[in-house]
Amino acid sequence: MDWKLNRYSRFKVKTEDTVLWEKITRRLLVDFRTKRRHCPVPTTQKTSTEAPHLSASYKRFKSRMVTRRLSAEQPLASSPMVARGRHSPCREFDTVCQRLSLDSPPGGAARTKLQEQNTETSLQDAVTEAGVSDLSQRVVRSVTAATTYRRNVPKQDWVCSASGERDRCSEKPFSVLYMAPSAPDQSPDQSPDQSPDQSPDQSPDQSPDQSPDQSKPQLTLALPSLQDDYYSHPLDWSSSGIVAIALGSDVFLWKAETHTLQGCIHPRAAPSLPLSLCHSVSSVSWSRDGCTLGIGTKEGDVQLWDVEKRTRLRTITSHLSGVGALSWNQHVLSSGSVLGLIHHHDYRLGTPTVGVFHQQGSVCGLEWAPQGDWLASGSIEGLLNIWTNDLGSKTKTHPPARTMTQPSAVKAMAWCPWQKELIATGGGQSDGVLRIWNNQSGTCVDSAQTNSQVCSMVWSEERKTLFTGHGLPHHHITCWSPSPSLEQAYQLHGHMDRVLHLALSPSGTKLLSAGADCLGHVWNT
Image (cartoon, rainbow, N blue to C red; front, side, top):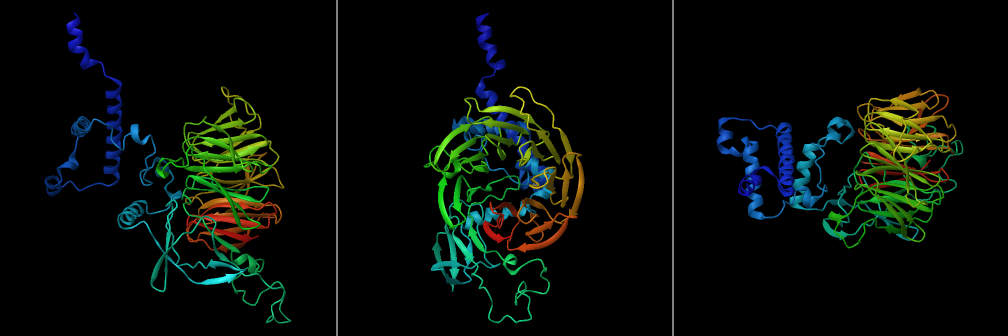
């Protein structure tokens, strides 16, 4: 009887290694069929004879994988055993972008092909230097519309082209590219009949409510390696005046008052690790007192840092997917993940996770109300959920108090600071509608069509206005006056790609915008 078991059991019992490789080959076959479905190849006789590999079956595909495995005796570089889920997904075949294709930049296939060509030829882009001027004994470089930057390439030196010569210059994060000259108290060529609120070079089509200082950015900063990710939140301005922004796998701290770089935080365990093995930062959020910084990574970690001491307080690994949004409420930090889970963490406790919410669809927006009594979460399914401050427990959750719907993903959202029952949301490119919701009744009290993708928004309590950052077609910032009805006050132009993130200074007089063009502009509100 033993010889029968030894003879036939090896054909019936599968080892863990065999099961793993079957899963790998099955997953690779699904990707192969998906690419063939999106990029069909004409099945003519000529094609089938010249390229017989295009008509591969599952049996043939599996036999090739097994043959390669036996010959190599090691897992493939693209398998989950080596990549561990860190492969670079194609935007065109991503399931999220298939459902919300208009929320992603157009031309995914063309952009992928162009990036491959650029990678084969060179990893450098030409930056046209328009001119150099000496302002306040510091050299800054003017930025024109012809200036192009290589985006999402971590810590690559940019190549400057001036007078036909190519010189390598290192543009560090938050290096000043343009600084507006200080305006004098009274212009000498100003006529006596001219109003002091109107400048001589004011264009005829300029809004009368928009001053010359608002029409142009006061400061332009370099933000290399800023990810072109619509669903991330890597920018925040603290109450102490420190700007935190995630550039690649690092978080840089910049003091806006002195225009100086304060330091850099490395969330990865070992700073000597290569960039391909580092955790990419997807969200940052300051505590109310401006002393603690919360960092969320695409690996599902939530890290808390003491900025003054430059020490990591703790790392919370409660999520199984990327953390795209963070929001503070006193000592509780709420984090939202791609799987639709919202975890509440109190870092003062031994077990920090104190409550869990679950919503339908990925969490792409999360913000506590200024009073701390309501939590708003945006879903990729177009749902705006309002939760109470009852955090529940880790094992028991409760449904949201109210749910409002809109046709596209709810990513851009902001609570009104002086009317606590109002919250504003923006639609994607397929929707493009700015809506003001009443939290108590759950109805839309006002709306305005923007005819563009709303990527970000922030309220200004000082000016009693709402600022929204937009994508195609103009990549501009719009200032809205909410009372008595939602009306457009003026627009700010300066970005060459969509305005992904906005942050307001504690005084409410400065606005920082970060775009997909890897540039940051500081505006006067």
